[in-house]
Amino acid sequence: MRSIFSVLHRTAATAWQPPTASLRSSRMVFKLDSICARCRTQQIRFQSQFNQMADDPRWLSVVDHPAQIVRTGRKHGPGLIILALIPIISFALGTWQIQRLDWKTKLIAKYEDRLIKPPLPLPPQIDPEVISEFDYRRVYATGRLRHDQEMLVGPRMREGQDGYVVITPLERGDGQSTVLVNRGWISRKMVDQKDRAVGLPQGEVTVEGLLREPYKKNMFTPENKPQDGKFYFPDVEQMAELTGSQPVLIEETMIPDMVEHLDREPKGIPIGRAAEVNLRNNHSQYIFTW
Figure 1 (cartoon, rainbow, N blue to C red):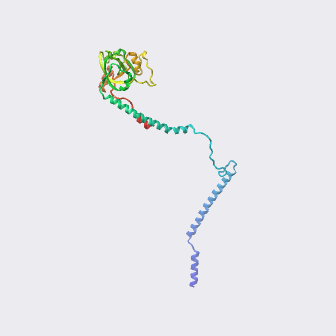
Figure 2 (cartoon, rainbow, N blue to C red):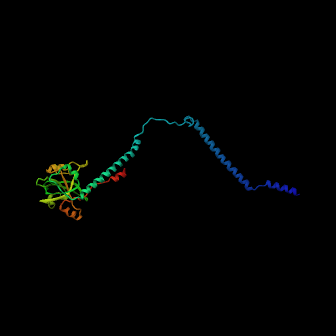
Figure 3 (spheres, helix red, strand yellow):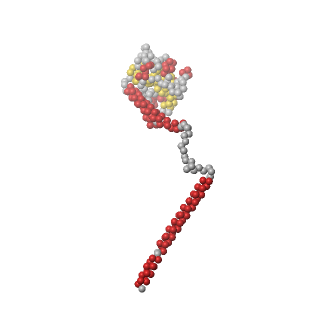
């Protein structure tokens, strides 16, 4: 009896399995079958497309016709050449601006050194060739202003108002040459000398100012018309010839004072410039720009 039961027990143990394992294995088999089915479907679809491309007479295979490097013989276009020149030109311009900055800084320092020196009396006769060596040098001269030969240069703007710069010959006498004096700015309303009698000093006067090198006209400034009394820039050579004076220009200076300016403007008294260097030095900006 014991042997029969033992045989039945072993048979039942080996024959029976949990239902979950059978279900799980069936699901795995189903998933594998479905995946294989999709792969076969995609393979068949790709094979059909490949066969269609191979049947097309216009289709070229990469294996039969590999890519080749062909030299066309064409030169580089102008666009590529311009792009290659841009960094070279920028470097050259930046180097040039560094040199210009050094030159302008030294020039301003030289002029400022001249400004702090005491004013010199203007010699009886001036050599126009050496004026550049005394540019921005403070000088003074005594004589009589020739208001009958006055010249108005402009128009010139000052603090939003239109006006003119007054240039008057200074007749020194006693064998001394006549020089030109830039007396300063007046309003357009005071152009007529009858309206500014206070601004026309009579008798002997002493003028203190800066000895300046003749101005250079830029390409945008029109030519002067002395026959019509119209001057657009101070052409020292031309004005000296008209007035019989030496081509020497003195810019009259004054201490910057707002109250003094407000008092002079309605009276027609010219407002002189400050004794300072007014040269622009923007080369540092140009260096960073290039």
